[in-house]
Image (tube, rainbow, N blue to C red; front, side, top):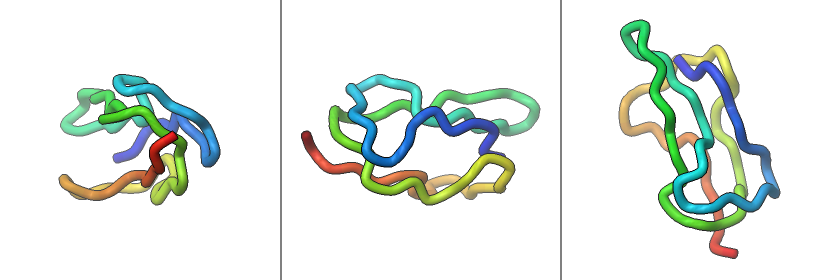
Length: 62
């Protein structure tokens, strides 16, 4: 389940920034930016179940 969204559309993020917190089997996992860029779209909101491999957000290079 997606527990927390730490980014917003239009925000500039750096590689390694924590963007999301996902809870799986009672453990929280940080999902980090794979590269530097600007958040273009966030596809899920907190409280929603997400499947492994789901695209949580899109971003464009800055």
